[in-house]
Image 1 (cartoon, rainbow, N blue to C red):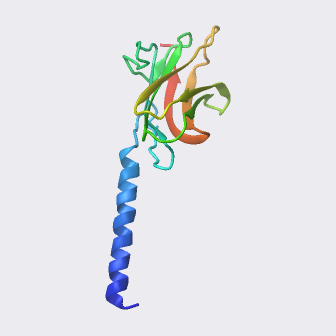
Image 2 (spheres, rainbow, N blue to C red):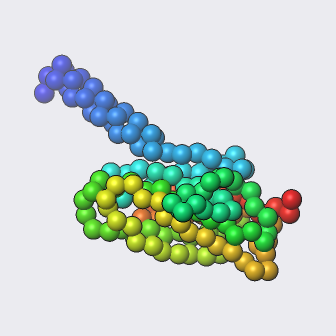
Image 3 (cartoon, helix red, strand yellow):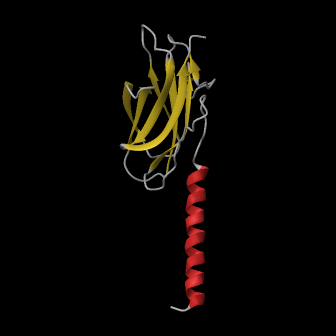
Length: 158
């Protein structure tokens, strides 16, 4: 192989790699009360991708959170609104949330089925009648068992 051909091939490979990396980063959402990064990843290998995760104390009729927050009181119900997009192919996907406490203890897991016909907004929620312990929490979202996004939040007394 001559040098010119190898240089051109190397340049092409770098351009493709840069494009793929840029596409992956465009699907990343960052937000957190603790300064750590929460993400919703967008991978093209699955027909359904998570584009946004919002948390709040209520949901509207369309399953969106009208007033997103990342801070809750111990006795509040915590709603997660998961926005997904699909390429219109494949069969319905399993969307799962896992709420965990700061030590990794699982607070709740729920599963819903979402279709592949464009954008969908799916609601999940968790509550504890005697109140959540104060501390840091995380909700993880999975599509067909694969990690698809996370969102950090906190339960405070005030």
